[in-house]
Image (cartoon, rainbow, N blue to C red; front, side, top):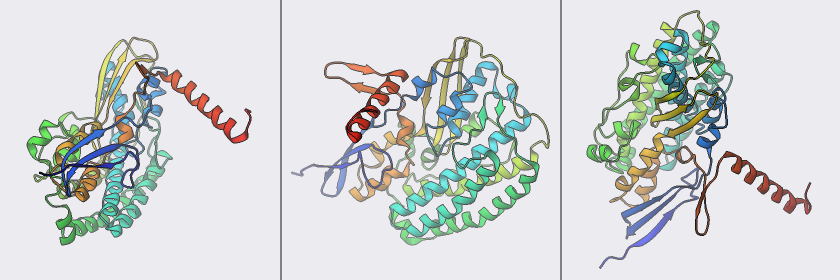
Length: 402
């Protein structure tokens, strides 16, 4: 009779930049079951949103995720604009193009970051160094357009906060042209490398039906042949006016997830080029929105990891009554329950990383468990708790309060 043992991965582990706990049940080297335990990041962002006025919230939700730091404010703005009558009826033409350019630059940034980490996790550090080297020009483009390399502060209800200068457009095109050979390099390095194929093919497989049953989104779903993409299915920005393709693979293994992300780099570059070509040379970039009427709205954006969903309820005041966020990682991480089972322990670690998880994205309501009851903390409780802990740290360090 076989004997199961438990192998813990996390909450702190070299493979994970954020705390999350995956408890593997193994027989020998084979994973026969897995428990996924979340809840190590207590953030309270949804509750904090209700204490901000509508124009402050984009700066708050931008910090849900550093890599997807335009997806969340974009989805939030779409949700509020949904109450106002829809993005296409509110946002000026030029701002629609700028929004799309920022959204696709973010996808390139995220996919290159993931590709580098994926190379590092399987011991292919050359890919890591290459990917992060060519990430730098993308961050330079962000800095040129937004003034920031991360947390871009571009989105606002009714448009964007900053225009793209005419003199910057030729340089942006040149930098995109120089990025294409790097993508070709990655495509050849991954698709034609027999060692990578042996390591990633038929590992961490998520079948088409499993992908549907577990409701995964983004590249995780498309790698299993699920033909979904919010940019096409529920268009926003100017994506429906442009020529681009939804990338699909059918095998659902880690190799397929890698190929989808690499090929999506080509599509994003093409979308940005077309947007720069078609964007109006002049025009306003911000519609003046004075009041948010009573109502409910939703916003959906195809973040690099998949569908980012925001819900807003307004009572006619200058603050949201309710703000609900569902990140793509919240959907994708759960699929490890099936994709990691059946493989080895060493396969499980890279399978967990293959969905490009962002654990802090999944956790926004802070909960503190008491002995016999459960207390949900609001934003002011979190501030008070932080102040008390800071005071204790000062007392312990200095020996007396200051």
